[in-house]
Length: 289
Image (cartoon, rainbow, N blue to C red; front, side, top):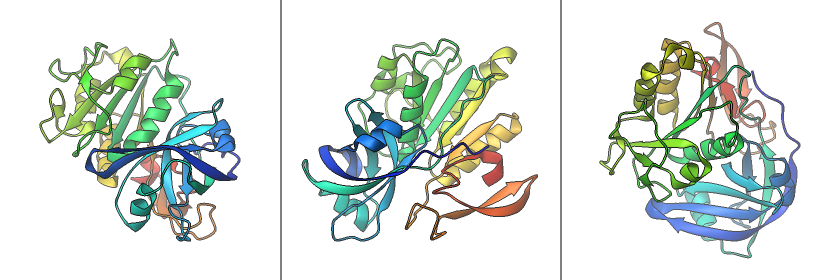
């Protein structure tokens, strides 16, 4: 199921915006024209965090503007590399490899794309949502979860989602403005959010759909492995096609070091080890979980 790869470019990218958010989260915008021109939903950047640090870090692409030549990532400080990246300022130059990896693919018979993002797995869902906007044959729903403050202001949705519990009204404003329904989940008691996990709200939504709509559901997910395991189990129970975007540490991002391999299964038997950087990061969920 893995889709074709984009051409990969090495660019010296300039920091144009770097916004600090709650809970040590950051949105970084880079001027990287070739990457912006070729990036698609599911791709990532392999980015230099500091001129003195040899190994780069992978970051999912959240948005890009091919005409303006910028790409944007959302990240959270989790170690020394991302802490060094957080110190970069507008005008700084960073070596950037991208766009790396394969992409999400929407099936021809899909009518109801279900986009599930958890934590720093939210960015690929935003990118995918942007590619789906304005398509009259699709009725996407994005369910985004976080156990720390969301990396965007939340507000009650202006878009009806009748198959979601009526008290669950918190949404991402950007998706609302694009005309794409979104709902938020958390165990932290944030106003308007579903109290639970993304896969739990997803299943409640799915079971409330009529049979014809259920047949058109295709699931896309990115987040921690425990979340992806739960999403994959939900999809298995209901025979739903599901693509997952994996997050793994990697040294080279070009397939040479094999430091990001994961077991790959066919017919419930492991048949190979796949490299997340070049064989993924998007995989058929049943082949991984």
